[in-house]
Length: 317
Length: 317
Image (cartoon, rainbow over all chains, first blue to last red; front, side, top):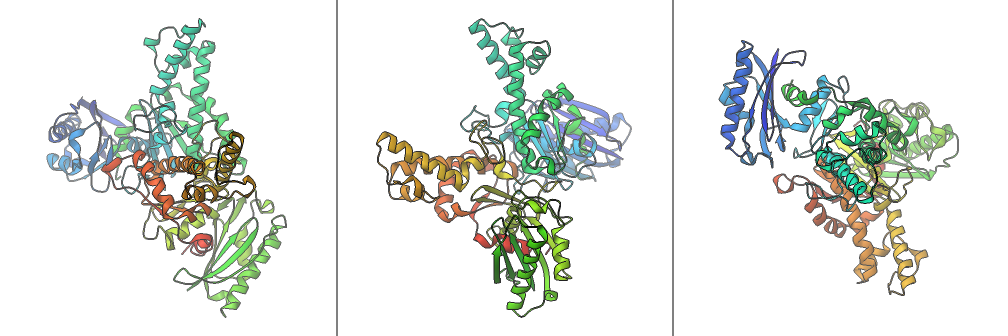
């Protein structure tokens, strides 16, 4: 069995050929050129699909399924990309049928929102494998969410759901890209962590307080974590604040869904088990049901950047 | 077709005989005596079941299904009431089997958390009838939630989910009965509205500001709404603040689930369409997906206090 997963991003298109062990055995990519016409972008996807097959000496006819993970609102019933702010030419665009026709493919071609596809990847082949009700949270530029209920991706009647980063956790709080204020994303994304870290560095500079987080221009999502581990008090303050917001949002998710597993992916998840260890006591103290029911497990996502390709490949499988 | 719905509350047990038009054709109730032994309480439920049948000249053998809506965590797969702070003697108690045995019933006996059962009632026979993905929010003493996904009640792998009132919308905010701070329930329940109204009355008294909301001891969930309608500025301030929190929480729910319908029940929903009209512009401005996708409809729940009985009766149907 071979399947193809397409990760159509605002910057790059990555296409992978996936085997029946959920491994990507061939991967190729091209820049998206996101402002081009949709046909030109889909033609590049088709080229990459042909190339990953050719490199493994197989034909498109041998492929059992193709899936495309797209940003924005993807109608997984019709294969129409409804809207994506990152891909302006794809408004109500039948991307699945177009790719199928370009390839002359006989297998099913499916689409899904990228965060949902990544969650599906973790559910089928990653951290949440073997569970039927699970959630994935991606802590990257934003906070992404994917919901798996009864073994199926859930995205609402209009395919726009699972926007778990856009739950307000602080009314009238920090502005969010979505237009609301105080969204979880505005506190728990890597972007937010960098903002908090810079603010702390500037605060220290203004008050003459010492911190090893010296240069605000070189801050990354690791700076505060690294500083804390090196014993820096200011770094620990940023870390603790970040963890508090993260635990608040995760506890919200648990109180809503009580899933078997919440997988945590994205750049911040590279902190690994120590991230989980920091969150767990706060979640345990506040989650609904206390010791009367088994608790949701928090796990670090395992597929990393391949989650979207693998999840896309496994759509409809 | 006849079914029996049991609404087992901390104060009263209400039992209804429901016909195939989802109408309660006979209803009887008794005080719960919540601190009694579980057997004694279930025996009273059995008595009420027999009485509603006897009053309509039918036998328990003619009943096609019995459902019990309970507070707390109800395992709908085993019929075991796992935990309810309002019914201390029901810890891991097989309430469905016990009732079935006491009645000698041959039909299925099901249980469900009361907020979920009410949501099921609205989904099957009320405001959300005809939709497969819908949510019910109950604005009463607390804020209750019930989630229907793909035509089924969703309550998580441990049956403790759908606690939609216990989503923090204001980090470190007002204390909530659940132990967290800043839960939606602490701002959008009738209890919270009464608190906000009293605070405003006291604020007015302290500053010599005039308001028709004169007596803090007589405040109800209607006081601020009535005052606003009578042109009272302080009443309008309370109303607007309450609506802002309510819209924030509802927008969270929509961004998570994008359901076809959110039904709003509980005492505050007696305000009717004017409540929806006040919320809608705030939700429309902030919900994810904007005009690119069809919007969730907000509706006033229609079954009122009967939602729990009707929903319980229709469990397993």
